[in-house]
Image: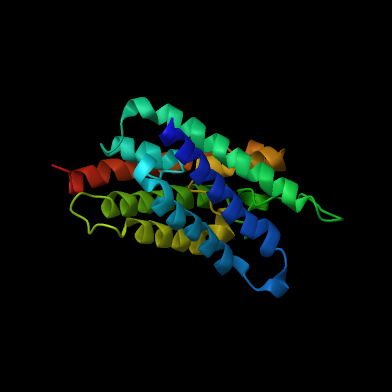
Length: 227
């Protein structure tokens, strides 16, 4: 139960901090955070929570990460579904708090609410194929970093920095393409509030990250097995 609470809190913070920076701060150009600021916010949420609760749950905060670690032989199958449920619920709670804060301003309009999308709902107008490729490849690379940084032979104590900076880089690359998911829990939490098109496109932001993560688990297990 402690592990599930840690996953809930970590995913809550990721959504509130990352999506919150997009909804609350990036909406105002005069604040100057832009895409770079939102990218850094997502990286910082993961970096801070890795050190806060990583020793409790392993700091997944993402169903795709849990799947990738399981495929890579680093995670017990019996914990997979409970972790995913905790992550999705944490993400929804983070989005709910964000909605309560954002809607407290007169004239509030929900808009896309930092949801992920492709086609006309991609920030840069990128196609479904482009979105699919981006999410698979970037999640693959994210898991390669995670599996490498947490390997038994990796330098100790630096995994959170590598993982947080990796997520920052991923957002710098793909915010224009999909608004960056690489995390089904993050996508689900925002889609529930954005509704309509976001829910209809949500399938891609479950399928692509999980495929990319599973492939990374297979590849890294071949490249550098724990034993």
